[in-house]
Length: 165
Image (cartoon, rainbow, N blue to C red; front, side, top):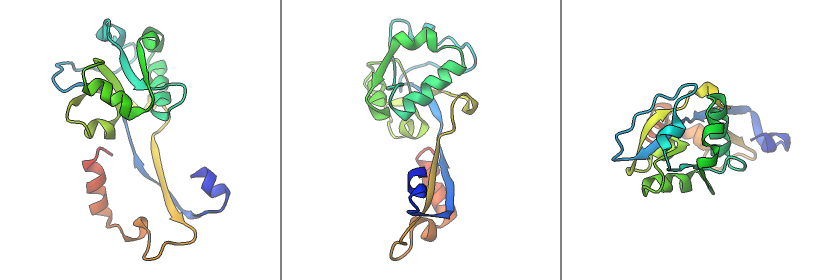
């Protein structure tokens, strides 16, 4: 969005934060785990000899958010050698969905899309940069109006919430 704004390709007065997402800790759907994610929580112990599936923490936004949160919680050093760094957040989701990893860090919206996983913990929002999806009207305007101009707010909100936003 910043790139587009700098090149004057959007109507800057229409820019707004449309959606927010959350980071969650997931496990396979049949897992009995429930995790209170707080400073110093025993993630390494929970993993045992298993791996923590997450998007590549050096290159992928979801992985960067996950690493930042684990660092803020003081557990990154304990688990960094156990990370199964995936190409993207959906690949990390699949590792947990197939039972190849006992836990994973993904976006709440991705967890909602896979019935073979369940959320076992919610990362505090103050432990990583905010996960925000901005929106705006594009220049030139689209014929018939843009999503922002024609969507009914209550209807759009219900759809977004259904998908985990």
